[in-house]
Amino acid sequence: MTEGPTVVVVGSSVGGVRTAQALRSEGFDGRVVLVGEEARLPYDKPPLSKQFLAGSWNAERVTLLTEAAADKARIELRLGVAAERLDVAGRQVVLAGGERLDYDAVVIATGAAARPSPWGARSGMHVVRTMADSECLQVDLRRDGHVVVVGGGFIGAEVAATARSLGRDVTVVDPLPAPIGRVVGAEVGAHFAELHRRHGVATRFGTGVESVEGDVGDLRVVLTDGTELAASTVVVGIGASPNDGWLADSGLLVENGVVCDEFCRAVDAPAVHAVGDVARWFHPDHGEHTRVEHWTNAVDQAVCVAHNIAHPDDLHAYRPVEYVWSDQYDWKIQIVGRPHRATEHHLVGDPAADKPRFAALYRGREGQLGAAVTVNWPKALVTCRRLVTAGAAFGDAVTQIDALAAAPARTVATPA
Amino acid sequence: MPVLKADFEACQGYGNCLTGAPDAYDIDDDGVVVLLKQEITDEERPRIEEAARSCPVSALTVEDS
Image (cartoon, rainbow over all chains, first blue to last red; front, top):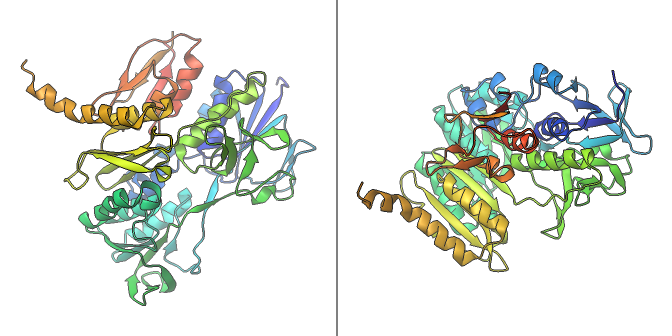
C-alpha cells in the first residue's frame, strides 16, 4: 500500500462521511481513515424523527456509506471504537483501548449529543439523537397511550407529528409561548403553534415542566402551573450540546465547540479541522464565531474542509448562508438566513389556509433580504436563497416573490 | 463523459444542489429538480459530485457513461 499523508476523520455521521468522500473528489490521494464510535454503518439523522421513527424507512434506507462505497473511495472504516484523546503535538488520535492513529491532518466531526432530561431518566422517557434512540422510541410509540413531548422546537415538533401519524394522542409542552418563534419571530411562530392544533395535537406553550414521575406506561408530567399530564411515553427534545469533552486535555481552544478560524482550522493548531455541530468557526460575513447544528451546514463545511486539506495553497474561507428544513405534518418548512436577526417581515400567501403555500421575507439590518421562511414552496425558497446570498435589497426580493406567487394565475389566464 | 442522473420521485425540493452547481441543477415551480445538462466534463465532475452529495434524500448521482 502506498504511504501518503494520512487524514483521520473522527466522527461517522454526515459531516465526517462527507468530508472523507469530498477528500477524494478534491483529489487527495493519501490515506483516509474514518473513525466512528457506533458500530453501525454511518447513517443519516434527519429521518430519525420522521420516516425512520414512523417505520416507513428502514436502516438500509438511511445508510450514508456502505462498505462497498467506502472501499471504492479508499476510505478505511474504523467503526465501533471511540476516539478518547487528541495528541496535537504528537499528531495522533488516541482510540479507546489505547491504539494511536498517526495523522498529517485530523478532522473533528463528533457532532452533538441530545441534552439529557433534567427531570431524571425513567423508563418510557426518551431523547432522539441516535438510531438506537429512535428504535427505542418507536417501540413505545406503537403502544396505545398519551405521548407528552417536552420541547416545541424542530425535533419536538417532528416527533409530535410522527407520533400523531401513528395514531397517538399527543401534547407538546414548552416554556415559550411560541417555541419556533425564537427562530422565526413571534407572529410567524404563532402559525407553527396553530399547525399542531390543526392536526389534533394539544399544546401547553408558555408552561414549563416541574418534574416527571412514574414509569413507562404510567408516567406523570407535572407542569410549573401545577397541572399534571398522564403519559405512557415522554419525549424530551430540548436541544443538543457539542461532543467536545474528549478534547478537554488536548490543549485546543474549546468553548461550546472547537474554536476555529475562517478556514475551519482549530486556533493555533492548523492541522486540526472541525466540521458540523462540533465546530465553532469564525464566519467572515457575520464577523463572529458561529456554531450551526444543521445538516446542510455539516455537508457544506465538509466540502470546504476537504478542499482546504487537499489544497493548502488555495484556502477557502467558509462563509455559508444558513439553511435548514423541517417536515411537520403537511408542512414542508424551509428557512434560509437568520430570521431572528431581522427587523421586520413581509408575508406572501396565507399561512392560515388549508395546506398553505406561503413565504415570510425578513429585512436584514442593512435593508437587504436577511432571511426567508417558506412553507410548501421550494421554488420561493431557492429564489430567496439566491437573493440572500447575493445581498439583494429587501424591496426587490418582495417584488420577486410577489411575482412568483402571481405567476401560476397568469399562466392559467393566458390562452393556449 | 460523466452523466447526471436524478430520481425525480425522491426529490423533495430541498434545493441544496443549486448552491454548489447552479449550472447543472434547477428546480421547477412544483419544487422538483431539473437537470440543466445530461453530460458533464471530468473537470467539473468533483464540484457537481459534491453538489449531488448535498442532496438530503440522495436523489442525485453522477455516473460513468
